[in-house]
Length: 79
Image (cartoon, rainbow, N blue to C red; front, side, top):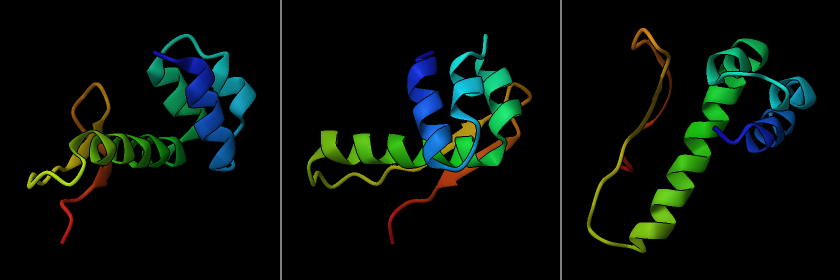
């Protein structure tokens, strides 16, 4: 887990980026920043996938879950 990047995403989303960057687990980072972090991770993942696919005719949905499988964030298929 890139905690420095999670800290940057958390800070950009209005959460405590320094605390997130110092977290020991992704779960701890999520507990610190809350849903804002999950949404930011989903947004960034979607952007990376779109860049990699470069207009390929593939629909991608990003789902961020916690350890129990609960959905914390989702970037739906493009419409």
